[in-house]
Image (tube, rainbow, N blue to C red):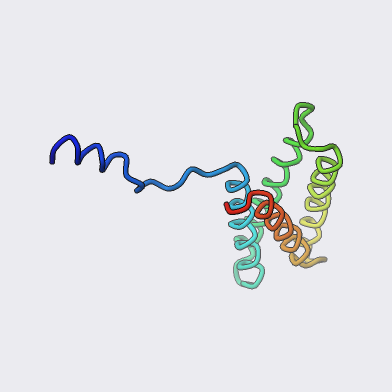
Length: 124
């Protein structure tokens, strides 16, 4: 193989496309939401369901910490809404783990966030 072919191969479009931050956020929400839906339907694997709920709580905790930063550039109203959703998610997750609530509301919230991320970014 000559140098030209090696260079062409090295710089070909074989690598995954560069992800945007919104795309990365979307993927995290999609992966976690899918896991919550899958394991909520599988009554035989409560540990996996609890782990999916924990991952969702961790995601919302990261978002809450980000919007709490004084240097966050999002509008104040959006920052407040995200922080409220974090608090709601944490409280609702506790209810789900006690079997006092359904996961459907968390799935709906995450799905709405994914729609918003998709519409803002055009195509991820």
